[in-house]
Every structure is written in structure tokens, then in C-alpha cells.
Image (cartoon, rainbow, N blue to C red):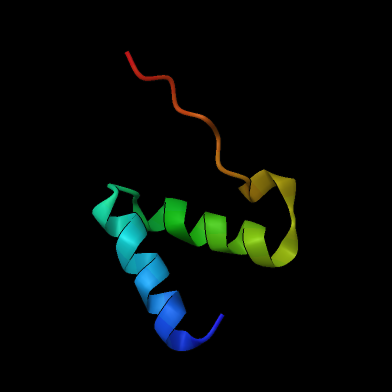
Length: 45
């Protein structure tokens, strides 16, 4: 992913309401595959 794509990716997640920690953890998961950073499904009521 180049810098322009990376920027759009981050801005899109911010627009979707993700926190900076959620974004950073997701990026760590994508790069490392470490399950502890994998996004968790949120229960919506």
C-alpha cells in the first residue's frame, strides 16, 4: 500500500468512527498477523 492509499485508508476509518487506537491496532494486525490486534466484533443494540 503506498502512502496515498494508506492516507485514504486511515481517513476512511476515522470517518467511519474508528478511534486512533482501533486504527493503529488494525494496521498492526494487517502487517504482523498478530491475533491480539485483530478487530473484535462490536455488539450493537
